[in-house]
Length: 293
Image (tube, rainbow, N blue to C red):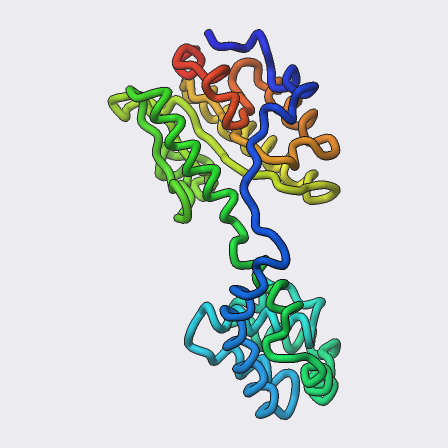
């Protein structure tokens, strides 16, 4: 059937040997490139700051910048200087400016204070550039994971078909995979088909856990559990042999209760869910399991 003599839980004692670490960048090596990249952002922010009579006006001016990349960077600087309590995702959206001013405007730092604070820092400000640099590759580890997953899967299962965004790209919505799926907007990362692209063998999610804990960890586990239950209940109701695969990797797996929580999810539907790191794929994932009833 599959190598279910060993479950995900059985690898915990040697978990550090089964995770894949993404490469990172060293500090302060990144500072030169960071300052070159974000110096124009700080120069433009200064220009907008000196021509704004209020912090609300500063945000309105930022929202009018046509370049999306520049607008997002300016919004991040605005959040640091003016309104650290404003959600980042709201600041990214031009249509949210009025709502932000209404909901958070009372907490905005006074424009004179912002100007005074900004004037105490050099341009480029190495500290702020380093903070902005952290956003630059956010998500890259996840993209690297899925790209390597697709390569590994095709190498191990040349007769099967795997579909999905291999790096950045739109998730697959299950309404496009199954007819009359009850939650058609359910996003997933990949779908595994048989060689004829007729039968859906598995639905998968892939995540790189670099550092997780607390409420963030609880949200991930709860979301995985709900996703698996929904897919497998649909499969049961429609007499499908579709499985669920969770590809998770990274040092975050070794933190808190993450490993145990994933192990519990794997056992919640016996032989219908498999939790894997990339290194486990050649040892645990088999065609027999994918095609089993």
